Structures are given as structure tokens and as C-alpha cells.
Amino acid sequence: MPRFVIEREIPDAGKLSGPELKAVAQKSCDVLRSMGPRVQWQQSYVTDDKIYCVYYAESEADVREHAQKGGFPADKVSVVRNVIDPVTAE
Image (cartoon, rainbow, N blue to C red):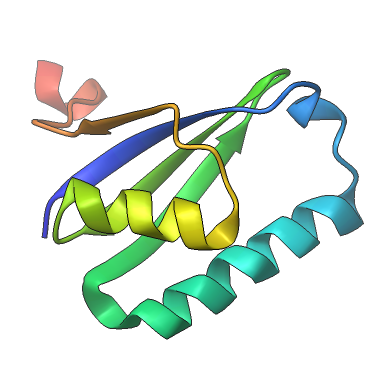
């Protein structure tokens, strides 16, 4: 299944409290359960004004459907073509 990186512009995302982040995660998981296995959330990175999410999905359309159903922005959706890390240099 292809992997996607989703860029979500959320002003002051880095200031979201633990309970606020929990509520967002719960909403995302609720939508994922309703969509079945065609979309899977791996993890997200919260920065000052954005959240970058890594998802596995059958298509970009499925990623965007998840965002729409959850009420989340999906400002940019990019398919991951390859992954490199320090082991790649060996």
C-alpha cells in the first residue's frame, strides 16, 4: 500500500494541549475505523504551525476523504517514493 505524507496547516498547532491532541487523534481513529483498512495512520509530527502526518492508503483520494470526514485540513498530500536513513549511506 502506498505511503503518503500529509501537510496540514494549523496555526498554533504546537500549542495544542495533551487533551486537545488526544481529541484530534480520537476523531482521526473514529474516521479510520469507519473507512476500513484502506487508510492507516502511522504517525504525525506536530510543529509550531503545521502537523505532518504519515499514512498508508490505497490512494490519495482515500487520504483526502479521511481528512474531509474528520474535518482536518490536507493542504498538501505527497506520495512517498523512497525512504532513506543513515543505513542508506553504508
